[in-house]
Image 1 (cartoon, helix red, strand yellow):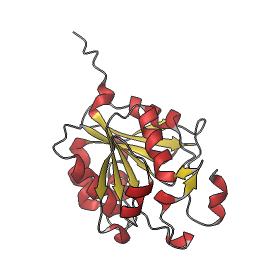
Image 2 (cartoon, rainbow, N blue to C red):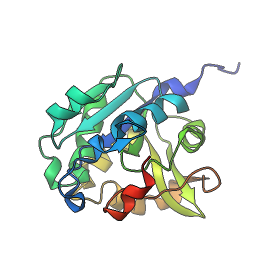
Image 3 (spheres, rainbow, N blue to C red):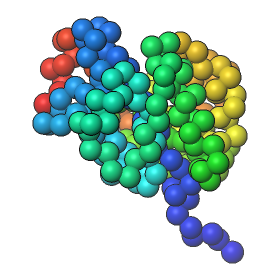
Length: 202
């Protein structure tokens, strides 16, 4: 008998939003204005619109101010005191926060990629099968974000996530097992890293 349960409920959205915006004059990316609100609100809304019912948001730079200014109802806010050491620490903090929640996978997105909307995230989410899934968005065949990690991979990822490399080393070692989902027709994977990149924000 087929289980018609919506498996997407097993997947938690994990938004990494701790960066301090060093190349942006020390402006935290979570607080950059986009459509009149902090960018972190937009990014969390994308995960919600794509079908993530549970969302954990990792904060770091000026976390108290982000909590005051951003409206993130229903989100679990996770503080990463080691955010300055790189994105790897935020990924570890986020995965740790999901332990014991019943989530079978984490769909990881970055706060500074507003060109990736619900359509791309939903495609990656739809490719989830079980706790051993490894799924990545691809753009013209090149792996990008968001990335979905089944819970069976969390310990391995946490053990190799250092500096700003995040899960790169783990994914490289498990490349044969990654399901790529092409999203180049519905999203643009640019980052907001420099002053010039701010032109992408509205």
